Image (tube, rainbow, N blue to C red; front, side, top):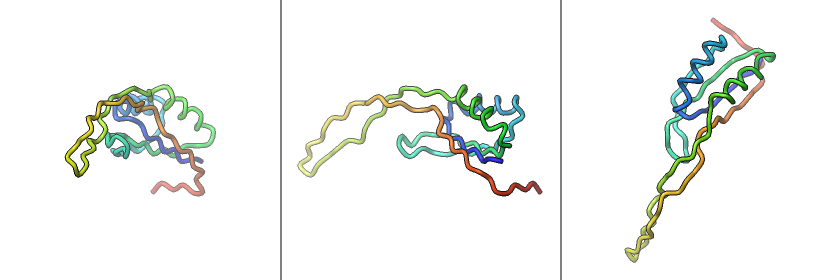
Length: 109
C-alpha cells in the first residue's frame, strides 16, 4: 500500500476530484496555500494499493496542467526614498507536485 500526497492548483482540483470519483479512488481533499505565490492549492491525500498507483498518477498527470501567470515582485524601497519600479514577471504555475510514500500499516475504523 502507498500514500499519495498530490498538491495541485485550485483550478484543477474539481476536475481531478471528479476523475477520482469516476475511477473509484478515495481521496481526502485539503485546502492549502503555496508559499511562493501565496495562492490557493488543493492537496489530495490518497491511500491506494500498490497495483493502482500508476493509474492514480496517470489521472493526476492528465488533469493537472501547468500555466503561465504574471506576478508583481515586491517593491524595493531603500532609505533614500528611491524605489525601483517593478514590472510583472511571468512564472509557470500549476501542474502537480506528488509524493508517493510506502505505508507500513493501514486501518479503517
